[in-house]
Length: 465
Image 1 (cartoon, rainbow, N blue to C red):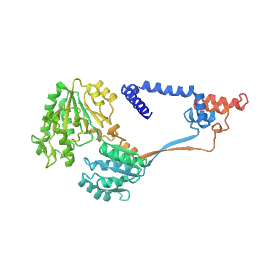
Image 2: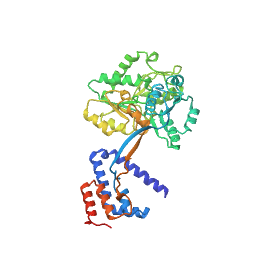
Image 3: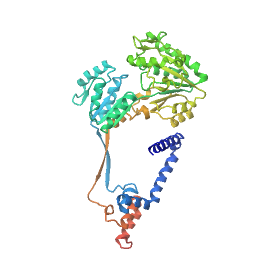
Image 4: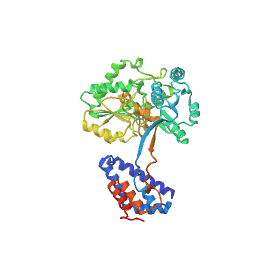
């Protein structure tokens, strides 16, 4: 019996996902029609709704109509407002790849919203962690902003405490641990994760500028160790050779002919991640796809900027976030196929597309899902404080930057002000047909009918029991 239910639930979810993929629910017309149908459901089934509520809860038909068959009535006179208030005690986990910025950026939002904060820097960047622990008390209120340093054992103890908000930047694996801990106290969380961020290369007219920006973004920002770094590049097969040669040209221009000695490239954070990246290249079929780079220096934890052409799509380098200086170039017959390719994978934190085709831009925006979409540039969306930054699905949830940071660390409290000088008696029992009709007219905002209904009742020209 339970197995049958499980199969049925699985089929239901699968059918819903398939229907969602058709794009039909994105249509404004579809949404309006569904909402109209919902209103029709309520209006055409008042008696059935009333009967069901009486059977389950013993509700009188007038009470049922007042509370469950219509949008709740806002009684005049009244004034409503939203008042933001701080959530309270906030825990912020910062990441190792941008250990200063990713600590201070969310602190700005937390402080501006009026919270007190504990920041837990990443132990994988110990110098920056020590800097924050020593310097913040000299500038910020040490009674309100505190730093707790340490490794995994400290994180475990920190997560045992009750927090009013947790803000985490890091890997999906650790995020699941954070979220599980938060769930014990129903603590709201913001998760800034990552994923495999694709770049679509539609061979724009100014393709040299596009390639320049790709190279600068992929290897110039912490050697690809960034959640919004380009993870792989999609291009039509006929342009792949020219694209790769141009990538090499700008790599030499930025980082020199001997990149192993370049001072403009960051090293890999630690031995664990160095070995992880090296293991991605050990697959024989992946190694065979290397068209540039591939050299490593274990002593200095350095990996040369590496380009791969069409590595196996089922290899780990194409199923897991790379988070390093390796760039797979994936070829397609037509660049429009890149949309289907992206949609076959978990939702990324960012999609980059280099194109001047307005129709293709619209298709990318409407037919894919990601934390952000940036056209003809890379990474700059993170610096735009008028846009929210955050992921969707496995790339995270919640958002911040600018006003959105304030909102993330605030609770918008709804406040309603009423007076005691006026009362609407039909909201109270004992119930009658007069009160039911009054509520019907009020919910429909039929003010003329409402006044007429009351006048006729007072004159005794219309009686209800």
